[in-house]
Image (cartoon, rainbow, N blue to C red):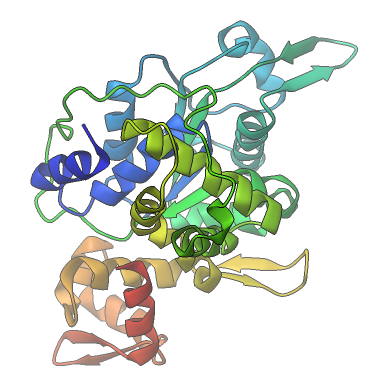
Length: 335
């Protein structure tokens, strides 16, 4: 199946999830580390379970710290497949949450991990697998605020931000025929003039919202090669970059949701903004106050009080919540 067919098949049973599945599928082929950020109940697990359903080699873990790698050294040496950590929130301590994310981002990017102490030693080499991790915005905020974000996570992972709730939840996964998820070796060729293409420049601009210049080039080319391979092409082409732009578009919202107080320190994540964006992306403008209250399991009175503190973004009239211009512009970014 080509990527358009895959997205159409997902949309048929799980509307709103098609771009997230496509992003994770391509990233898995490109052996990237992905952090899927979305509020509870929006399909993160359905997405990664769909990838697992079609991957030849899958490992699922709840947590993996650097020290913990010694227990699975044999499993991950020379690994070529998909590692899934379904919910970072399940990990009990903040230290283990942070260590799991930084460890797996480093392993996916460096393809190598080793440690030697007086009590044990291990060495993992030739790890050419993908890592898919799911996290809720409130937990992602902890990750963003930690120093490991700047040192390891930001440049060595891709973040996908999802904002759509399923209107009719399904018990089954999306049905994808003849899709096999196996990280590619070298992949299709990349033309020497790719960086002059308008389509690639647009793609590069999306990745620059998350990465340094060198990493943006590296990740965007790896993802382009993976999509070209999925499409059965021997070479990356402008239409591949154009398709990838549409799939990767939600990456751009990171510049609006992460606030930095310094060049390398003092960061915060606007998890409440992520939450309200999810409501408008799901229901449209306006959103019923009742829907917001039900979705976040609070009273309408409390929902109104929270929204009153967002007076620059929304206004409530007759139990309907309307997005103001600044929020409307953000919604256009994630469309």
